Image (cartoon, rainbow, N blue to C red; front, side):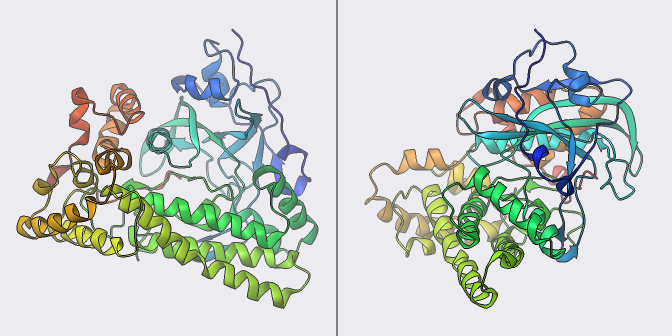
Length: 472
């Protein structure tokens, strides 16, 4: 059957200053690594057996109805403002309305240079493409709002980083690619008309209940507060929470140097370019507040009374700390079996985290074994754990079904960093078996999968990954 994508491209109908029309650059020898048939079905895409899938998802051929374009945005990168960024190696093919009635973007990443490429080659190498495919799909299975992976394709070309590496293209699906940085680019240019157009478009697409920019700010704050608390409850570290990587929709976007913690340490940093821990695990809550302050600043010009808006927006941003703390407590209380947390339960959670930190306990395995009675073996100071467990069991006596609460809150399977590195190394040599195995297992992270229990193992000392890298 011929591939059919039911495009309905609203972003392409915005004024030309929002983007640049840009066709993908053809590659030498496209070959399909993976096509997410379940996601394709949700998107109303037909023709999974079309022999041209590889060519289309590598950019050599365009599906009917596509209007490829590179989006313009700005952004604070590690705190420094860059007034023009934009899609330097990605093109938005277009949009579809999925079977749930939600509008979704379909984008190629690594599809060649665009007018916003800033002298880059516009390409991606195989490693980051496979990492994003696996991690974004795992995050979806974990229940985290996230972009999705529709396809991964080898290009047959080499890309030059520190050395020649095999090229690849990722097909990414998102609620949209509108970022905090999209608002920043027009606000910084004092382009009132474009800023108003972007606001109107964003409200129609994501927040139709919103009546004014202040309400939009609060709506985005609520989603981002819930998102970062969920990240932290899974030990996830985004790695590059720049404002251009902060989606207005509230989805996790841009899986560059991301990673999941193994041994619990709140100061953990993976990103090789984060030399001062700006985006460390523990810093994520503060950074998302900072990002929302930048969104507030970008929205101010839309308000009739600037002085009043500054005060109002400042107050709204300041509410975010309480929102994050509340969401954090809900998430972490569930991880220890508490479905209706009280403020004092935060102390119980914090005491367990302190025990884990002191002994370098594995984050995921400690929590996943709480419901099965094996968590004590994960803690170095067992006498202190026993004292904690006595208080914990007393607290659980007031809970109706703590074991099931824990089982639903604590995954057994996450994309372990050392396994991802193993997967990438094998794929570079042409073996995609671990890639496919990880996708299969991680699609059911909360289920007992005894035949794949090796994927729950924490890394040995020699396997520990200390740094992850951006794909550009």
